[in-house]
Length: 252
Image (cartoon, rainbow, N blue to C red; front, top):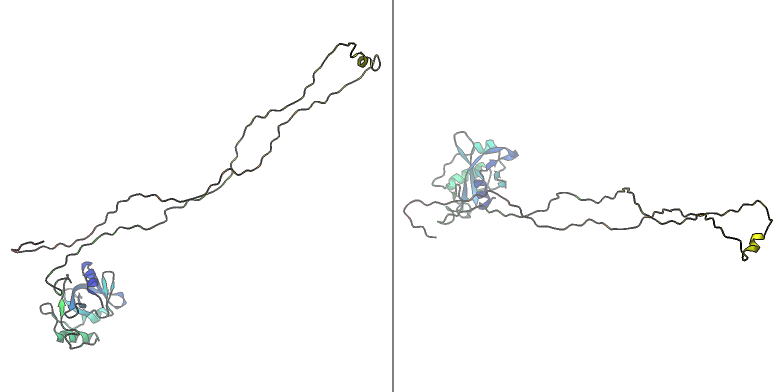
């Protein structure tokens, strides 16, 4: 069975009565509370074009969003006994007739079922005390984590030219002449007086040599850090207002 808060949610949301198989029976009219337990016991639904309302028990009802789901076909509800509440109440005889029609047990004990009072569109006042409850919607703003993108590391190879200057050494031939003196006369007179001969000197030169090897120069990794930003959220909320009419004094 539904509770009063669930019924208030349904009434304020303009819900409908949904029957077996998900068929809409009609728009919800009023909800009747049990005088002893103050729990919702009956709901009226408009099934015809001329505003006729039928009573449906809430004993096995459940809530789906703002709709009330009951285990009865629309035709069963349309053929239910037509009763008229008296000053927002049903008599025990009317309740017994309705319970019997829907195949539910009914107790004659007033403390068990008794009369049901109409609560209309406000379940806070007529069945509780002389005060009327004013409610309003409140906005609770929070956050949730969502994936917004991905970042990846990718390594690839590029080629560039590197220019460096390196000193090199090389040999070159130098022709040296020296006069014959007493110190070198022996060397000068060695060998035949007149002859043909050749003398050869090997020249050397350094060449640049390039050697390449891979060396580690840097380590790169992906990390995450949190930054805080602000975002404005706008949402509509509904508030109830209570107005008083007549000659009275407003005490707050």
